[in-house]
Image (tube, one colour):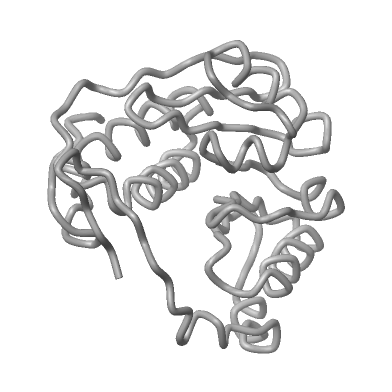
Length: 206
């Protein structure tokens, strides 16, 4: 159940249903088909044991995993070390790094902590302010276009999907984050979750 207030902010109540029944053995046929190079995007609305299994199996196959750690959950350092990228928001970043984010400098400190835990690329989403990114050598802030939000539901999902597309197409991390910020900024101007997702033609980028 998704409730949206007058400012477009949402509060979500989850009943796992089918998601709660996705167990490691459910994915055996998937891994038989998976080949490197590839990106696998996963988040935490399925059992944590299944997420950790996915990360481990992808690591064995040299497949890059992007983890959207939502809803906020503690992730083992063993799993963190096997991630290509992680995309927490401010709340999730604090849980995983122990650092409260209140400005760009604290976002950088949290990203460095996660990188030191073994994650290759760290992207911290900052809502309407955009996202902070760190690849181990460089870092920076990508600002989101200014829009009037009517429904923020699934903005994070949109961001992560667009990021995975951009990286799979060979864009740099900074370019991928910019692409993802643009996609998410469009999604919040529309009501709904799946219905709010932009098409590629909506993004007006190559």
